[in-house]
Image (cartoon, rainbow, N blue to C red; front, side):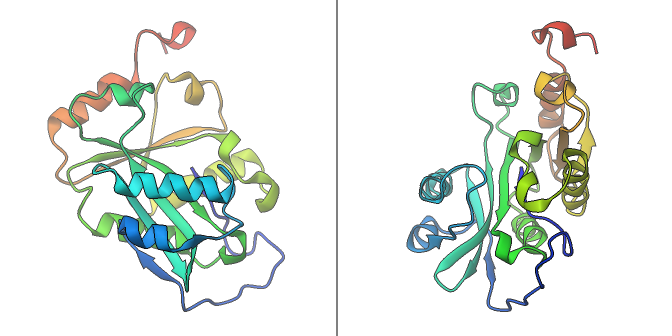
Length: 215
């Protein structure tokens, strides 16, 4: 999920911040040494989110790209393997990854930082042989601060993710299928093995999802 709106969605004046640097798949020590901007609180309180980002960065399968202004992290994009309890976590190839969250502090929105972080992450080549998915859930949208409706926020995310190679995909996952405000986005790396693609296709439609199984 992402928490950044386009320029002009807020009534605040756009302020250029040339000092912001983007560090793709940053070293855990760098993330640990910086403080997290207090406005980065969409998913959990900043102190807990900071700890979570450090943990993901320390995981061999994790990648946390950060936007840094001085000693402060003002945005991040976190990649990791899907949780085992999720359907995507049933992948046995090890080639399916999840873009778990993208968030930019409100006072730094409108500067294109979300796109910069995503572009930098994929430019590393780390995900060239991976299939990366992003689940867009309306209950994670920053509706209050963006002033958007769930459908407009979903469309904003689809455009953002689409700009770095993601495409919409269908699934019978109830959290996606049952809520039109939600969506599943997928980016297939140029070197992704056929076995990984086949695993994803198998997981898109599972038989144990009750009334959604036949759709």
